[in-house]
View 1 (spheres, rainbow, N blue to C red):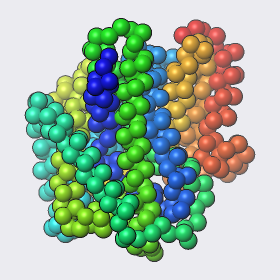
View 2: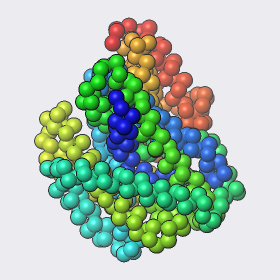
View 3: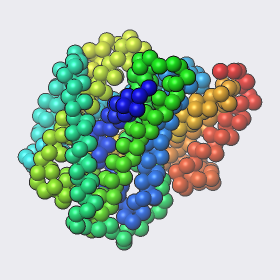
View 4: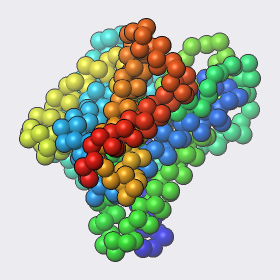
Amino acid sequence: MKKKEYLILGFALFSMFFGAGNLIFPPTLGIMMGENWMTSLLGFLTTGVGLTFLAIYALTKTEGSAFKFGEKVSKPFSYIFNILIILAIGPLFAMPRTGAVTYEMAIEPFFGKNGTMGTWIFGIIYFGLTIFLAIKPSKMMDRLGEFLTPVILGTVALIIGVGIFKDFGHVDTTVIVDNPYFKGFSEGYQTMDAIGAIIMGVVAIDAIKLKGFKKHEEGKAILWTSLIAGFLLAIIYGGLMYVGAKSGSVYAGKEIGRTALLSGIAMLTLGNYGKVVLGLLVASACLTTSVGLAATAGNFFEKHIKIKYEVVVIVSSIISLFISVLGVDKIIKIAIAPLLLMYPIAIVLIVLNCFSNIFKVKGTYIGGALGAGLIGLVDAMGFLGYKVEFIQNLYNKVPLSGLGFGFILPSILMALIFTFIIRKQV
């Protein structure tokens, strides 16, 4: 396989995971972390990049099947878990977020806030277009995506480049943060790329297989493709987080939303022109992403649940419309509890599947998923304010629970226990 093909596949994989929504998290994390931004970046890259491509590698051990990924626990579990992933990256969180990001970055900065009616009118138009384009996906949308990705990359690179060298502010050294690594780690959940990779990674693996090289070379191709895509994501995340941290002195003492901060950084670096260009690109990229997610949900439910593709696209878009009017920050907040539950389970399954040649007993997967799920449930309920004193006291005694990694030891212990209880080979 030629180096040029690695680059093409690497850029294609990058474009699958990088959307305009991913732009809004690093700058906010940077301004929140102050001089601790680099430590937080490591945490963000762990979940936002490392875990994502580890999930793709894990898929190679399941013959590229998302359902086989969870079937080692049980078939019903795999169905439920995959449906939850599709709902998360589709109509519940990621799709409505594209509409909300577009409104807040491409409409509000130029036309101001037009109240609830304005968001509804825009949402109807936006998700109406999503339905129109997703019902019969065309090559035009694929070409639009291929064109937009390098242009967005160029624009973001310009903002980061100017932001690094332009004297518009400095890192706020007065910010005091506990556990900056975990803050970044948990914020990386919001990209939803790691859980999304369990579904979307199948497409990436199929694309690599279609290149027609020998089976023993596929692993090398996936490795290099993932490294290229991961490197691009890491550079962009790191640059945006630094520029966000650098803007700390400008926004010190002010509450500013994620989309407003990104628009503000575009203005600080490139002036009004930067805001206009960024708004147009975000709008186009978000629409492309929304169409892709609607189509993914449609294909999934038609293939596995036997619901018509067109019905899924329409229903997904309508649900997304209702959720999108809540705004970006509220959608992100709503997503936290489900992601706190899902991510520990996903992390455990990713690790176990990566080493499936070692972990060959069904009980290991059942115990690991159960241990992670129980701690994830406690975390999610705690975030929602539902705390049972007895359970909370036990949870507080779990090693690393204060850092947000409380699922690690219970997952290991439960995996060991169930390994000896359920000896069936997988």
